[in-house]
Every structure is written in C-alpha cells, then in structure tokens.
Image (cartoon, rainbow, N blue to C red):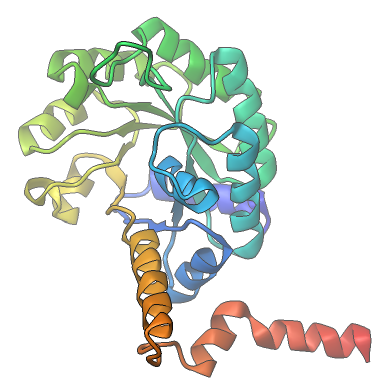
Length: 283
C-alpha cells in the first residue's frame, strides 16, 4: 500500500463506528510484528521514541530530525500498517510545527498529533502547563495547512482534562472543532463523566491517550465517538525487560529461555522475501 492508501485507511477508521486499539510500535521490527498479527493501526509515541533513540525518559530531549528518521524507518518497514505519531508540541512554535508536519508526512506517517502542552518544561514550572487556546489553535492550523497530501490526518491534542480541568478542556474542544483537524486527541480522561462531557462538545472523532478501568469498554468508547484508544506502550517495556533478562542469563552462564523459534524469526524479518530477491538479483 502507498502511504496515501494507508492514510485513507486511517480516515476510514476515523469515519467508522468502531473503536480500535493501535499497536505501540517503536522500531521497524515491532511494526512488522504488529502488522503480521493483524493490527489495523500502529502508534509511534514521543515517549517510546525517546526510549528507542536515547534510552531516556520522555523529557523532550530528542530532536525533530531524530523523531522523523525513526518514524521513516518504521513506516518503511511496514507495508500496509498505517502509523500514527505523537509529534508532541511540534518542536517549537507554529512555524516549527509546519516543519514538523512536512517531515513526518515525508516519513510516511498516516496521522499525527500536535499538543498544547508547554514543552519542554519551562524553568520554574513544577507541574505541566498548557499554552493558550489561541497558540494551540494556531499550531494545529499550521499543521493542517502544511500538509502536501490531503489524506494525511492531523489530531489536535490537549491534556487539559488533567492539567486545567473539565471547563478548560471543553473550551479547547470547542476551539479545535473548527481548527481544520481531523480528530481531537485527549489525554487525562479517566471517568465516564469526563468523557461524556467531552463527547458532548466534540464535533470530530476522538482519540484517547489514556484508558482507565472505568472507561475501557470499547462499545462504550465507540458510542462516545472514540475511534482510537491507546492501551499504553507495553511492547517497548517488554522488549527492554527481555533484553535485560537475556543479557543477565548470558552473563551468569545460563541459556536464554523463551527465544523465538526460527519460523517466527523468519516471518518477522521477512526472510523469504529477501531470499527471493537475492535469487532474482544476485543469481
């Protein structure tokens, strides 16, 4: 599938009636595994990008170039899987957001979010804080207008629910309804009352970045206009744990348990496809 076709597949999800959980993908291999399992969407988050690129926590320490290059590797490895990206604050002001939109689109990303959190954390700010509604709106509009492929999706993201409260979250949803974005991405929503209030105001599909036990039911989420709901980034955590366990076992002189069999490894790395190409081109 071309990148445009993958973006159109994402649009079909946003325009549909179901709520899907994307696979958290942090590198090419995880994207191929997710695609092989049958996930409809993949998600490349800022936090997993920081882990994959720097081995560091999510403190906005990576650059746009590093983020876009990792996104490019992921999108290139997948053949049909639409990849969503959390492009954080767009790496600066609205002009930087335009550049971010151009870079992640060129990398093959199907849709990306721009958030209104004041990032990186300013000096003297003990807690997360948001930029003004006006600045957030300007950033989202800049992202929308920077697209070269009109199929690319832009998500207006706000963490207002947990930072400034329900009233401000509702006000930002109202503003983002008319921003040109294709969906509204909410974080910090933990109760049905909060999601009900947000859904009442939203005129666009919703994406949730956090899921509590109270709102986890997919039928309920779908009924509130939620089309994509993230379920955390366990794959990158599990991968790190597996690396630690394997290295520790080897260090202690033990065999490594639980390694994939040859068939799985060959499927994940698409060994048969490469073998066919070698036979065709190398004799």
